[in-house]
Length: 469
Ligand code: ARG
Image 1: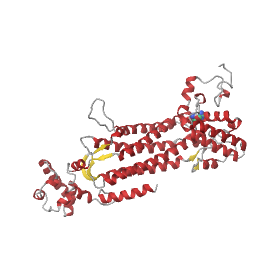
Image 2: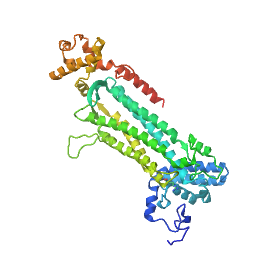
Image 3: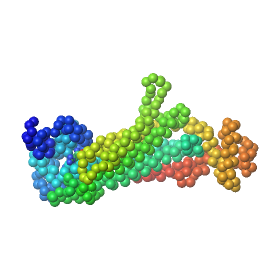
Image 4: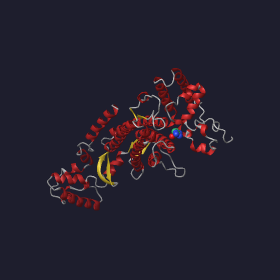
């Protein structure tokens, strides 16, 4: 192509008029977003239809133009659904691809669609609609995961395992209580997702390139048509900021962090050293060289994928940090981290809810572990306090009893009454009720405690809450 051949320098682009030579091939590939932003198509079409209907209602385009645009968009939707739409790299992004196809289908009406709008408010609108749908889907999947955890917790409201601090045996807890701890975390994640949705769900449409438009548009109308709760109140901010996406990635990162913690526990619990659980075969893989291996790959990969999602969060905050107002091409880089986060967290949550349902609990192994490590030492200390010994003294006295039991290689509950009385004369034979695992957990029946009766009450509350969502 010759220089000065404008406007044919790049005849298919939406902006070739003032250019003297075509964009270099490598630059075209470098700057194009169509390889990934085609995923915004359904939202782009929804935004365009809302915009066109508003333009017609405000007498900026004719009723005939609107009818043509609607007809063309119906065809385009069908082509995309059938996998027949031809995405062209020459057309840079999803917005130009659809607009050019529309014009090819319906002529001038297609060219009028972009009146009073820019790709800057268009892309911001598309990304918000995409993120809103993701918020809803992730929130729904978080509910399913909680339901799966609650079901397992209910089966194990009385199953006892050691609770840990510093990964050292601390006190006996019920497995139901342990699982319900994750339900609390995912309940907050769900809340965070819906809270984030409020700030995602505002309409940038009408901000145009950056300063608004000279056409008599009705922004409230497009906002309402697209289900937005409100309009962005400042056009410069509307086309520029991506904090709503950052907030979403942050919420996803926290969820992945919770899933990663749980994965770490499942991995430990499945190790023969613990032997607390078995994860269903369909979530595990074997080793090509060690025939005995059954690896908890899914849990490990979830732990790994947390890093990936957190990386996306860091990418997006870094992407924004040096940008002057308003839109800069940098913003095109918001999409891949966002899309990949949505794909990753969606698959993770679906698999996880199913995997939790497939956990086989080895209650005997848990119980045996709870009997090691003097898990009821605090119960003995509390017992002495109830008999009038000041807590600090009872703590010291129990520490000595633990040392003696350790030397003897037995649990505190295995010491005889006479042996225990050597540490404190107030100890009577009712001490053994406090030293059993059942006695220990049953005593912690206040709100937030590990007692089976309390756990069952919390499960009932959680079930009612989840059913009402
Ligand atoms: N593909 C662009 C993006 O993803 C669309 C907006 C382009 N706007 C512009 N003025 N170049 O951000």
